[in-house]
Each structure stands twice: as C-alpha cells, then as structure tokens.
Image 1 (cartoon, rainbow, N blue to C red):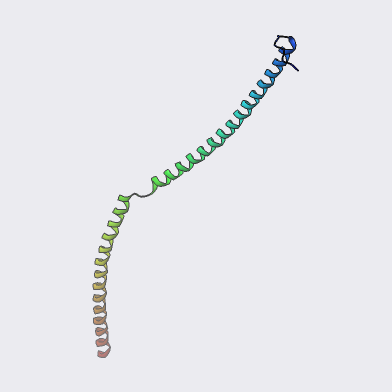
Image 2 (image 1 turned 135 degrees about the vertical axis):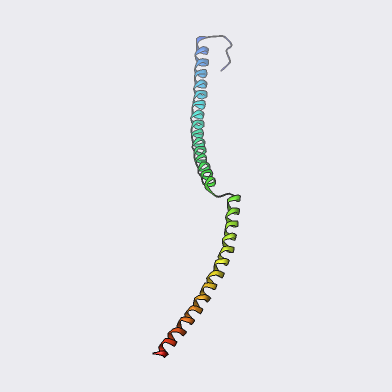
Length: 117
C-alpha cells in the first residue's frame, strides 16, 4: 500500500475518524482524571475537617487547664496552709494538755468528795 498524497473523501473520512478517536481518548482521560482528582480532594477535605475538629477540641481542653501561674499560686497557698496547720496542731496540743490537767484536777476533786462521805 502506497501513500497517496491527494486529498480525497476517503482520506478525509479516515483522518476524521482518527481525530474523533483521539478526541474520545483525550476526553476520557481528562474526565476520569478529573473524577479521580475530585475524589482525592474530597478525601483530603474530609481529613482536613477531621483534623480541624481535633485541633479545636485540643484547644478547648488546653484553654480550660490551669496555667503555670495558677499552679504556682496554688503551691503558695498550700504552703501557707501547711504553716497554718502547724499552728493549729500546736494549739490543739496545748488544748489537749490543758484538758488532761483539768481531768486530773476533776478526778482529784471527785476522789476527795468520795473520801469525805
């Protein structure tokens, strides 16, 4: 078969069919590529939304947690309360000793009154 450089209807029809076939291939390639890209963008968008929700939840939790200054002020208050508890313990010990002396005096009075009768 030899190449015929003349322009005929047969050559035009053959060239047209090749052009249509090539156009279909190109269209199909872009159409399927576009749907694949859309699906990948949807998956990526869903992942970004999930990550955004997780970041917002973490920020919410962190915003309600005490900060360094809050912890330090609590530590100072606990230290102060420890000192006050030592003072209270000393006072209670003194009251207990006083109560013991009063019980001893009271028991001596009871003994005296029993012996007198």
